Image 1 (tube, rainbow, N blue to C red):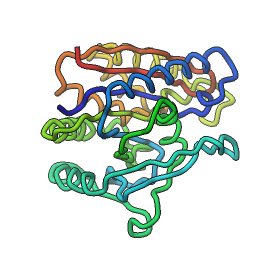
Image 2 (cartoon, one colour):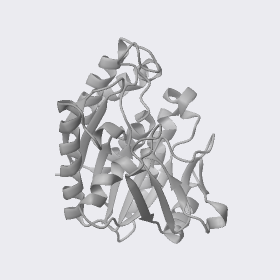
Image 3 (cartoon, rainbow, N blue to C red):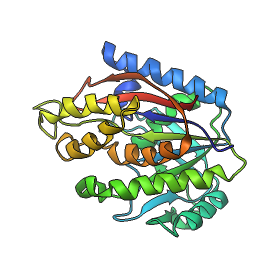
Image 4 (cartoon, one colour):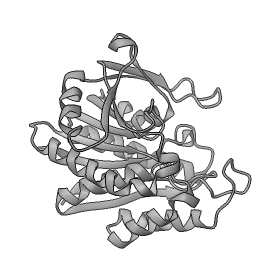
Length: 272
């Protein structure tokens, strides 16, 4: 037994404190996923974050036995705090296996004595999982900062990493849930920090097609990511590498919208 479920979850703080119907619908979907993951009874949650403590080149696994932080964003959402248990021994074994064929390393806080620091990219997608019961141990994989300028060129590498992660997890006698923290296009509004692009709506629509199983849509996503600016893109491509190995999959987009300048979606993948 290895991966028993995979999910794409947003990390926009609007899902913590909805102000409109779109954000509320996303929050409802997040709560549903939290209950569902509790029912899967995983031994580990493997979380990919695009906003963690990052290396410029390597994909970094957090080392140490704990992590903590809040969903703080511009002085708000500080009350949403999480403390996570991690398993440094298992994570180091995973790094040693993956580093043979991938740019993978580990990163720790002050020699592993202090907890690793979490922010919104990790706390928000895990919040409603913790709300539905005690979280299992969490393995955190941080996407490298080169994703900002090299995301399309990383596609082959990302798929290979996803494949190798799946094959490693398949060999262990543990139940693992994969969570991809990531949002969609960030160029939906002219007054947003990244401006407007006609490709934002296209990217989000193609994302839905990909999430529902259209393999051709995957390549269209790659072609649009430099203009749509999706922080979740690298995580999505890595997940595709896992899905390629997983077999017949049941997919469902539970919620998708762009209540602000960026799009958000809640998606689940399970074996049929």
